[in-house]
Length: 357
Image 1 (cartoon, rainbow, N blue to C red):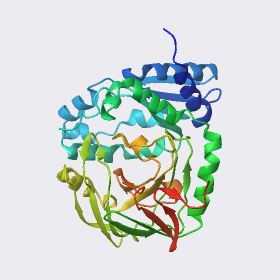
Image 2 (spheres, rainbow, N blue to C red):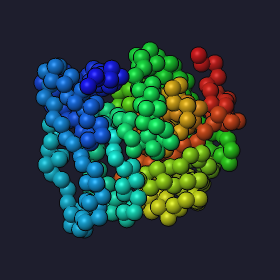
Image 3 (cartoon, one colour):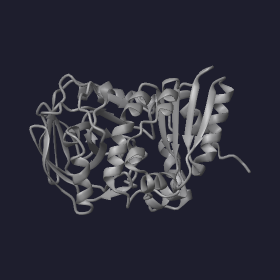
Image 4 (spheres, rainbow, N blue to C red):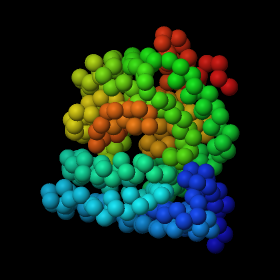
């Protein structure tokens, strides 16, 4: 069987650009049967670089069985061996394909929320490493995107296999614009929301952690959010699709909320802990090759002409301090009369930054 050169290119980006694998690195390569071709290519390249890669393959149905049958004691058990391994890990490459993206739809969301709280220290430790997340173009994800597998492969590889070093220069110029101000004011359809970012750091998502990438993001000052926002696309979290999300903020906290679909799940997630009632992230999607939503947050949050806000945990590398076991991104399309003001000055209109090539 002839190897798809796009898979080799993607593996080279993950190994040599995103995580910069070098000799004697201990590398965890995670994935599932759907993503085996890219996993094996990443594994091969890590071996060629003199690293010590380990393949970890999750099976379809594994998560469903866990959450369906796990007792309270099992949900609450901290996996000490997993923590010890991640402490000794130098780089972490997670490649997701998946055979059923809705596997956890009918699982009690409280179980998922409780487990996330237990696993939070491991997630924090993992974020200290060189890591990258890649969504492989599997048939399941293609179905979610309403595309054939072949069409979805074209979509994915066009969004990931780009010249990241060149694209990073544009991201850096936009990052500098955002970093120069404090108050961010976003307006659009059923949206008028503002918050401050003084003391927070903007980061350019340039392919070193997410793939695809192509965003600018920061952590809003969590007590400053005022106003309301109606999100444009379905927000998916833990296998649940929540449609028509509307959030209303006062002094940083969500005061009112609604959704057209799965509002009870939205309520459960907002009430998970104190941090889940506040914003943890502002992101601005800038990947020119991602032009439509596909119900996959790794792609949709990079959608050109959009912003996304996440309720819950803030990234510490942005100097964010909001803590939560939840981090849930929700997307707003600004291409139709959307605007962003920075300290009262219009800098972005109809999905584009003004005066930026």
